[in-house]
Amino acid sequence: MRSDLIFGALTHVNNRYELCQLASKATRKLHKPNTRLQDTTNEVLDRFKDTIPMDESGESVVEKVQLQERRAA
Image 1 (cartoon, rainbow, N blue to C red):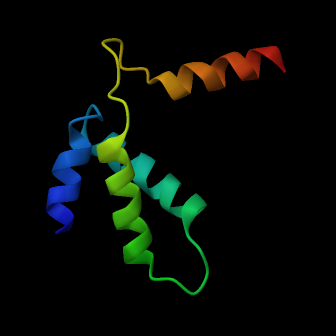
Image 2: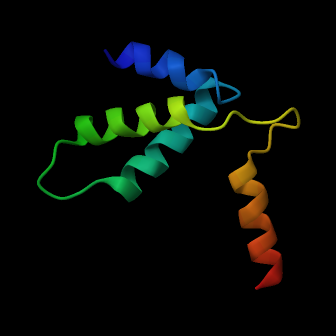
């Protein structure tokens, strides 16, 4: 069920609003034509559930790497 995926993803994201924003962005980027949008959304939430949790400062490891790459470029 999708609610199980949402609660699993909330263990790694600070709040529901942030989860919604991140999931919508990821769904748009990962969606493949001729597939159901619901399946893509479920896959995104499942990936959030299995990712590395955010650290104490609220900034994820991926965001830190992206920020470093942005500064270098």
